[in-house]
Amino acid sequence: MKLLLASIAVLAVVVHGLNENVYRPCPQFWLSFNGNCYRYFGERVTWEAARDRCRDHYSFNGRADLVSIHTEQENGFAYDLFRSSAGITPSTRPPYYGAWIGAYQTTSGSTGRFIWTDRSGLNFERWVPGQPDNHGNNEDCAHLWRRNAGDDIFQGWNDLPCEEDLPFICKVAPN
Image 1 (tube, rainbow, N blue to C red):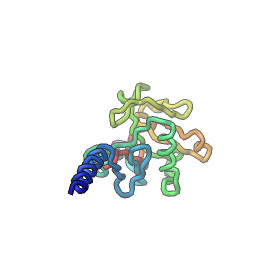
Image 2: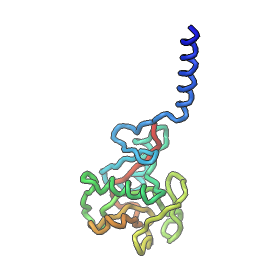
Image 3: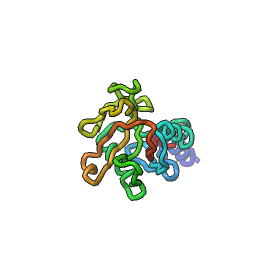
Image 4: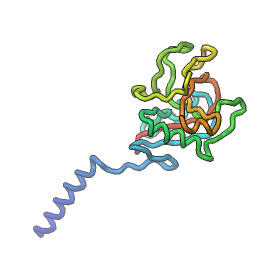
């Protein structure tokens, strides 16, 4: 009887200890990377529609958003999501191959600062050389940019009018 009670007590301590570090898998069809879940959506929509879809339709406890990128490794992971065979979708208006990410300009039509939709700091940037340039004074949203296979080395970002239709990548913490 003492052995049974001791075993139950040990089990309770172990279970309680695991509670803090319990493995939380990503939702179905989402991919895990460094503690977050990511999903590429091939539907071509405006930046605002992409943000809303992440928040409304693909949200788990209201936490999903367009992807924010904080390291070179995370940038490579996100880039590979859209570069995969499912992700390369030729645009009817080249050179806008790519996918929306969550960076946007705080002051529309300026060459001002970009921030992430999830309000995390822009502590990592991977702009294509010469970008952001706010061409036409209306490029307020950012996307991962791939014109050709040569861009696969740099895996950079570009600013683009938010009204363009592109696929998008969402990011969420595990369930």
